[in-house]
Image 1: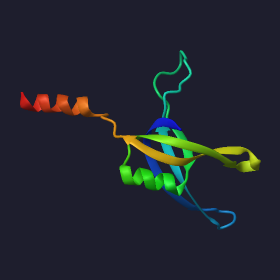
Image 2: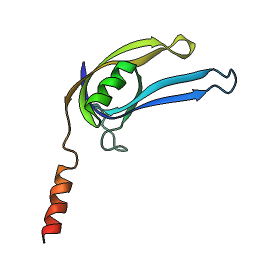
Image 3: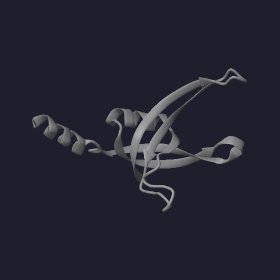
Length: 111
């Protein structure tokens, strides 16, 4: 399992224009500590991945953003190429993303 910061989990649904088939799924956006060193990039880049209903339910229950341990598996994708899927999510903790901002705001209001 890999520990990541989950930013959001979103259910989606659309109708295929050619076949009329209703397609649905879940998209997960997260950041991890991996980033290639580069003169042209700074910071963490969000990753977008498909997820199972179980992952969505776990994130919906504990909330996002949040740190989660994710377990992955592969499934056949377009032209049978492997596609990575988030298969399990275990809540770790909530981040304190805006704690400093809130403290600074409170200080300014007190002045």
